[in-house]
Image (cartoon, rainbow, N blue to C red):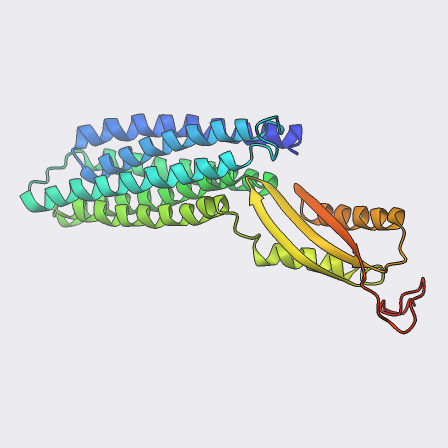
Length: 309
């Protein structure tokens, strides 16, 4: 259920993320070692985690595009949710390491930073690069409904703010001459990273537990069903979940007991086609069941249905 165009878009965006993170890791690590800034080094570690996460995202979008097979009857979509969850765990780990390093600096009081201008320059480059890449990833994620790319984009967008925070800290040290600001900024950066990790957990992990689709998407389904009120009596047992970019929807439609199998089959196709048009990448299962009857008069024109105009 993945078009060749969308698959190519997802893979291209994932490769771009890997390449940009690889460059930033090397740049931040070199500058962090030269300047001795724990906040710059913390950003290098963060970008290193970003690189691992980008690699996982690239692998997951490639694997999730595979069709259903003998062992995976529902396809491979949930690998994107798994990838997003792994990203969140890695980010949590990086944040706690950064906090530990910063606390050690604060305890010892030994903070030596050199070449502040160089550190500020690499943070500015990092913020701009991550903003551009994350914006592209978010656009592709929105177009393809990719959980893995959305998680990667959210991660990189957080990097924009953390890089800007480190840049502000280095500028503050330059202006005040107080180097102890560096580990304090590193802790603030780490706390922002923790917030990003939690957001990624909510985006990726909870869909592994088969939570229902967002309320606005279920409202679309109900709106479609309301548009077919002239042809059905009611609907119930509406259930939804998501696996990667694929939505799974099933429902029971109650129709007049006089309706033929052919007409009931045609009705289910019309309903599913309309839902798929409004919610792409939907896999829909419809169960048709007859009305229990019991009316005083039970004719072909079922009195329970709205009068046709």
